Image (cartoon, rainbow, N blue to C red; front, top):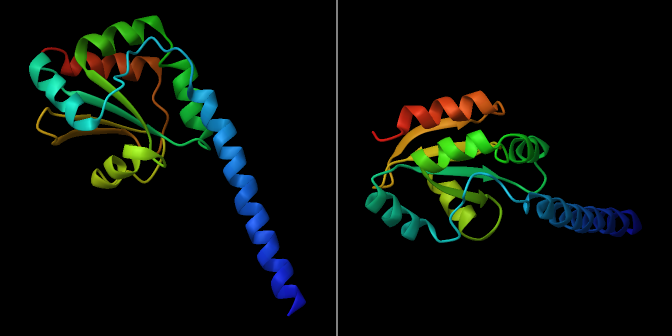
Length: 150
């Protein structure tokens, strides 16, 4: 019986520690990027995409995802990437484990990170990028060129 309490206590302590770690890691994503991300909800971003005649780009990450942080720090901060992506897309960035990001990630069946989606202004999935690899600067410029003024 005692070992059951000890085991349960260790599980609770581990969960608490992981939660603290994730919150600390999540703050590392709050850096300036060259890609301009909308600070709005999904439906408003879709409307903006329709008005601008652009697709929506969504970057899904989690606070514990080291490759997501590498992508954010090394690719999304690059000025050339920012210029191409800002011209081609209305950009959103979601933590898939917080707020609206949970619902949108579930809707588009996002299960690995980073996952990058290109969505048309009606909410239809056009392309999934990443999933099992971390896109590089050249990848993001190429995908931006592909969708610019389609």
